[in-house]
Image 1 (tube, rainbow, N blue to C red):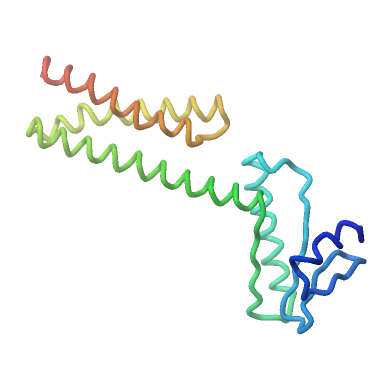
Image 2 (cartoon, one colour):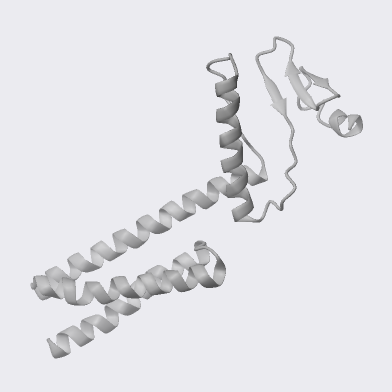
Length: 170
């Protein structure tokens, strides 16, 4: 649509617009900008992940079929940003959960000075985390920042009860 493409002329003033396919090309031919509008919503994390995977596959096929070596491909926009932030949050939540768990186990070992305390308290803690994350996956489809916060709270609650029970009965 030439009317829509004219809107992009100002930010990319040094690029020539090919109206037949919507491609923006530099005068030297060393830069091409492709404007794309996916059909799915940009708020859907699964769609953004599928889109990112499809673009990576398409990029690999294009690189294999092309004689141009060393071309760089970059993505931007709401879809890419959501995919990027989601992967960062997911990585941080997993790291936080494991670090919290390991620190709690070290705290048990230091506090009770018995190796079996780590196993007696650690096994129920792991099972609780697996059950909770399975429930969150079944109910919400994925673990997000909000459900991920519950991991740290749950570790704290399990630790509290486990300390009292272990100290009282063992």
